[in-house]
Length: 101
View 1 (cartoon, rainbow, N blue to C red):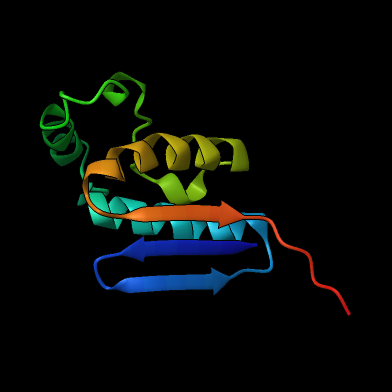
View 2 (cartoon, helix red, strand yellow):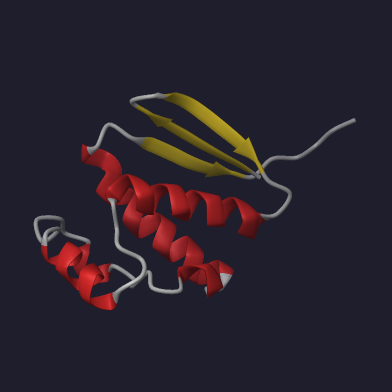
């Protein structure tokens, strides 16, 4: 699994042995880019109010304790929050890879 991020400071791929490890890195990076509060529901709710212009804001999964989520929940968080980065000159992708001899 490879997570690739491309932003103002360059192009950065990271390689991961597991899908979950890759998603943990991806979600962490996306939340950092968006400056999403992760420690307080109150701060998160305030941040979310500032995102009302975006059509998917109602579909946002709360990210308090996001590291304990299942793969399905992590994919939902990644997919939904990644859409919010489109205006930030940031692009990223999670790619399944195979190792060959």
